[in-house]
Structures are given as structure tokens and as C-alpha cells.
Length: 151
Image 1 (cartoon, rainbow, N blue to C red):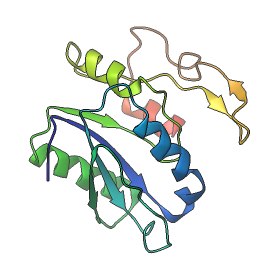
Image 2: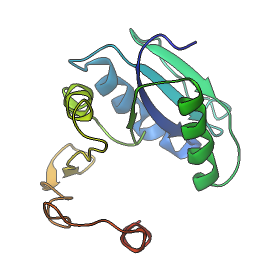
Image 3: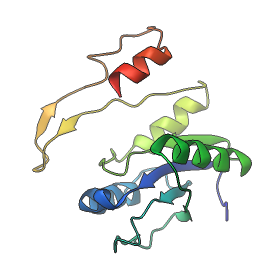
Image 4: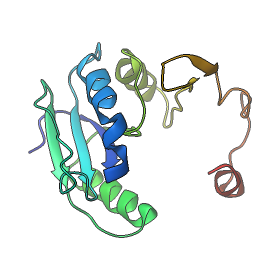
């Protein structure tokens, strides 16, 4: 059940089990705690992945389909629950401790906000800093062809 106006959403796949410990730890250590974590289970729990108990509210959905269909259904679910702010997360990422807070603050004054990414290896060593800034410049227009090309 919804308990906050901010929803952080993500999709859990069985292959994410390797990374999920770090994902959940980074969410637990967020400086801003007033958010619901909405995760779609696409076989993760059936593959013995564990969703740990957390200080924030966790809601698990079980939408099926292609990755695009699942994300669309997850987004529609969040909208239907009347969340004011939606923050997308990737479950194979470690999230900076202030990411939810910064996203929330920017979303108070902007319709959209894109977080910067630093690419790290399995030992947490930096491979590339500011990955998105190297591809997207300020005030550049992002069109659907860019999304298809880079994803």
C-alpha cells in the first residue's frame, strides 16, 4: 500500500541477483527516506532472490511481458496510485547515497531529471566518470531515435 508521494521503481530479473545486494544496500542508505520502493518481480523471487526488509515501504508487482511492456505496466501502476514523483532505478546499479534526495529536489522544479552515471567494475573501481555527460550536452534535444540508438 502506498505510504509516500515519491516512488522509486525498478524491475528485478533473475540475472540481477548478483547485483541486488548492493542495490538494496544503496537504497537503504539514502539520505532521503520518504519514498516507496516499487519493484516488479520478473522471476527474481522464484529464482531464490531475496528482497530484504527495509526501512522504506516495498511494494512488489508481478507484471509479465517484454521488458518494455513490464516497464509500461509498472509506470501505469505507479501513475494509478497517484504518486507525485517517480524515480526510475536499475536493479543492477549501486545508487549514490543522495540520489533520491537530489532527484526529488530537482523534480520539484523540473518535469524531468536525468541522473549522471559513473561506470565501475566488479571491484568498485571507476572505469568512466560522468558517462551521460560525455554523450548528452546541456540543452540538447533527446528524441526517440537517440533512445533507440543508445539503448
